[in-house]
Length: 105
Length: 347
Image 1: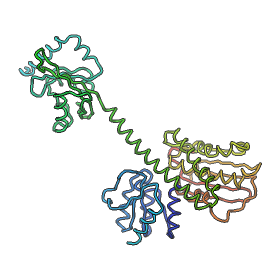
Image 2 (image 1 turned 30 degrees about the horizontal axis):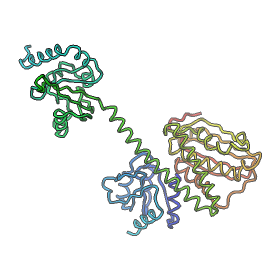
Image 3 (image 1 turned 135 degrees about the horizontal axis):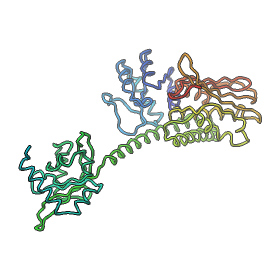
Image 4 (image 1 turned 90 degrees about the vertical axis):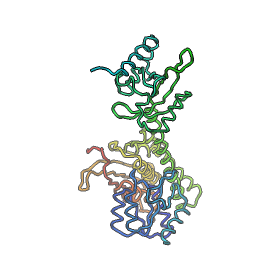
């Protein structure tokens, strides 16, 4: 909860005007279905569930995204090996750089 | 039905073997360690003795085992690496044995450590092999279990570090006075730590709401006899760890605010915290009220601070419900309306 609030406040500092968070896979899929996002940050694990369906939905709509994870290992999602991974705890500069990258292309 | 010559021959060998070794055979038969003897003079090293432990480990009857090739229980008979290991074990023997995956009669597989020693006749020729097995099923299960625990612990530590990072980030964003920054970080770290203690006592399965509230308010009641001014009413409804941590932080924010500005900041104010589960059109909801009274007159804050964001946005999001702060003149009221956790009973 506090981590999400920090991310939101970091993104607000970056000048993001609208930041929407989803806590579950179902919530994320409904949001992606309902509106257009410029970029997304996706935790590989949402409330204990692998977030692959969300990655697939984002990729299908061409929403640029990167992963975040609390795991130290090299757990990459098959098919998304080329996506950047932000590991917790993360540096403000890294988060900033990743979002700037996504929004530049 | 007549027995084949080969089988008769094998049975005669088994019989001779048992007679020759007398009491040792009885000992081997009754020990809890699974053992077999194999004939070193025949191709495939057929089994000529198997004890009861071996039979219960593998699920076979003795007559199904005797005369069979030594390796007939291997789960993957063509596993070249395992065969090479077994061969090496036959040739040299080792102190630690070799781990082999075997298959029971019922098809289930199990890992066993295999130890082989040669038995020699008086001319030093190897006539038999003595093999003992240690069932590694429990050991392997424990290894998997401890690997899972380590992964889970690592995940939790990383999340905790990120949470600490966010506490520091927020404290630095909203304050400039180092003493205030320190106090705000300490208070939140202490709240986080107390929630961890509570969850640890419950094996990180869940935490009860009543315990969570008591736990969060404990440091605020200890001095000045405030405990008597805090009333807590509700069932000990269980929440999963993530939700429990969020609630712990939220109650710490509410209590901190009450101590600084609210009904716990004077000599006579009080707080009532009560909750119940209600059936609504949205399903079963847990409705919680944090109600302050007899504190100094309340004026709504000019801007929303971290504490109120944590409750109205953070907690609401985490628990998939709503949490609202109402700055009533006679006392702050916080109302949470969240889905009742599965398993919580109606009142």
